[in-house]
Length: 629
Image (cartoon, rainbow, N blue to C red; front, side, top):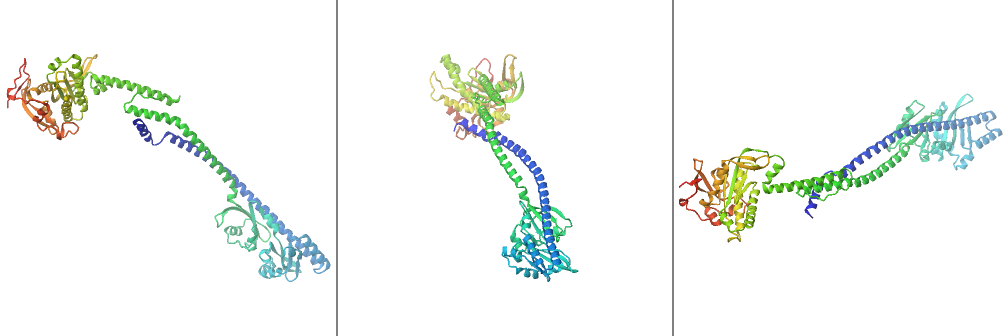
């Protein structure tokens, strides 16, 4: 995998919430909220209307059914009382009575028997024969209902469930009957099939109970045949205890099924018609509609997610390309191959991004070119406008280095060879300065002047001083490598001397508004230059003043040289030859494997140890003199 692809994937992996995901989430929320709200509102409004309609229909059906049942019971009673009056007038045993009875049962085929206990018994044999029921069960039933007959004799009309006794749908009506000044009970047995049909009204189901809660008529024949008493049900208790003729309410049975229930009491024997419709059945259409709406919402949501997801690619793909381009720019690759793929704001941003890359590339080229003539840190500050004409006092470490016998070396070389040789040498030396956060102030022929602490400091004067010495140690090693394979007039062995001093200087832009140069000036600079020139007579390659030594003495191995009285200074200045930095693990030839004494250094570099007593510095002006031991 290429570096570019790795960077691209790393940039994409940092995205915690992608744009596509956000768009999908927003659209999902909007759809769910809007369609969900519409569905809920419509469902609630329709549910309210449906409930009102269902309750009205249920109550109305209960009322109609009660009317039909009441009319049927009154009709049966009226017909029975009519035949009884006729028989009472014509005689119960005459031919007319028999003809009237036969005609009555011919017309009222669903009436099974009319019994006045102890005085009259009219049996519809055709009824029992067609229903395959034994007429002999009639006396058995009469005997079993003595208590009801007694109550009826006392004037109470009663409705009884006769189905368990005869096995077919039958009801017994017990009415008080006045005959000869005596109150007797008339027992009418008749089929309840017509009443069952009246109670069957589709989703609404009705049933009839008597005043004791006995089930008389129900769509489930088995319940009637079993003689179920429903008095223990809360709904029946409510009906029995209520003084209201009709009402409705919502109730839940033992199975947890909810019903809309309406009842209507009839005048016959205080019976009641109860009509129920299941709650879920009433709202089944709404539930189905809601379910369809949910499926539709899911389908729309799925389609929207797909659309948004693919649409988001038109946004995220250019953004990812911009992220990749930003990663390249971050790595210093400013010339990016990026073309707009859309004609919207992202396309405009892409064009601007490309232009920005070109501007940064041009700026980097300018800085690099500018940095070849001055330090890159200074170039950066100058381009930012952070350097102005003027200066400031800073404590810095100043470095000077010089090639020994450069004049003699250059006389043996052609001019282009001198330039080539110096370029190779300077490249190595400047690299050491840059690696230790130093600034090359200027080149003076074969000499190099460097500064640590201005314009940028490593944090403290001590750290700046140590960095300067580390640079000199790197130069020592680099020069050894440079001299490998060299020798002769055209490739002479190079030896240098380095002088280092720490002190206060004035650092800043020196010059005019047309031409400026960033440099440092002051006595500390002059002392560093003079210190460098002492390397040859003292037989050293790196010489530091006591100003620098006091800052870094815990980090370096040195040998103290004879003190020097510098011109303009009354007090002798201590000098130290740098041997090694024992903890420098990043400098080849230094550290624990490096030299342990100045003798080792001289042996390594081929320097002849000097005789300090015979040092004689001639010149027009002696800038220093060696102090005797």
